[in-house]
Amino acid sequence: MPMMRRARVSDHRTLADCAHRWCGGSPSSAAAPGPSSLLPRLYLQFFAGTSLVAEDSTGVKAFLVGFHSADDDEDSFVHFVGVDPALRGRGLGRGLYTAFFERAAEAGRREVRAVVEPGNDGAVAFHRALGFSVVGGDHEVDGVPVHRDYDGPGQDRVCFRRRIGPEGA
Image (tube, rainbow, N blue to C red; front, side):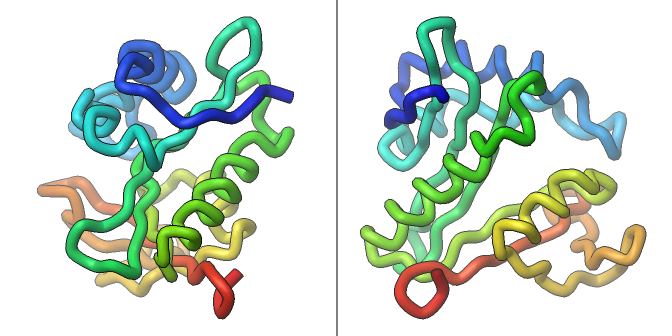
């Protein structure tokens, strides 16, 4: 099993490349940005300390880019997760989220939020399996509440929240 460590700014190029190779283009909209554009360098410049990388001697196998809210002392947010497709279903994503939950709780956070694109059934199921609840939206796609134009015109998202810490873990 790969070892987990804190991300570093110097990981940016590798993680952006992994995001591009592992995640491909946007599943729900041709106008949506590709995965590597969702991972600008600033996330690692300012949030490397709250982001995680799982790697072995052959390189990066999975990563999670997340941060603690600057505006709400109780919230943290998972921005992007990537797992090598050859290793999916082996617990790497769950392990990254679990470590992020623990670190967020240690920092006094009580809730973790995340968003995914509508139609990404695997990501919706994964977040639900991790104990996330779907936040009600303004319409539905395949029975799942969705927030229209959440990230801009045509950029709909399914929003999730999960309580952590003593009362939510």
